[in-house]
Amino acid sequence: MPGAENIPADLLYSDTHEWLRIEGEEAVIGITGFAQDALGDITYVELPAVGDAFSIGQPFGSVESVKAASDLVAPANGTVVAVNDSLENSPELLNVSPYDEGWIARIALPGAPGGLMDAAAYEEFCAGEK
Image (cartoon, rainbow, N blue to C red; front, side, top):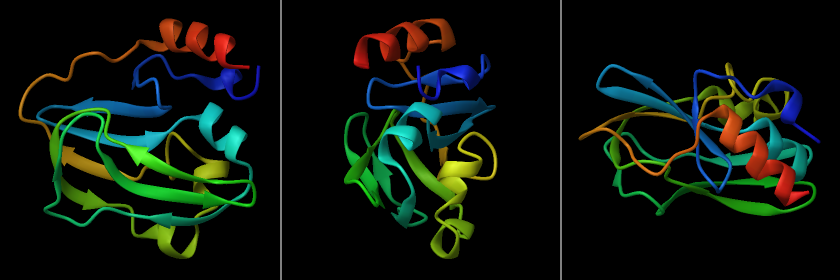
């Protein structure tokens, strides 16, 4: 299965293929290996602005690739406290390092996020998507 060989166990996952790493009262958001593999070579990332607030399920940016354009969908409620400006000049970081250098935004969490999958559940979900 594409992207499944590296599903970090310490992250939470949405059914729209975003990941969430909780770090205290904040969380880091990115797209999964499965998502970047499905999109192909990413050519552009529209980042949210620091201060933007969003709710679970709302679009908060987008990615464009040689194959398609796709909204980034919020996996949790939060307010953006930082964005990965490196993606503006190097959107390919989402392809080469989706879980590390390719993070998209850091948000302040108003509470514990719900409705997300652990790595095992996400792997099973992806298996049904192929």
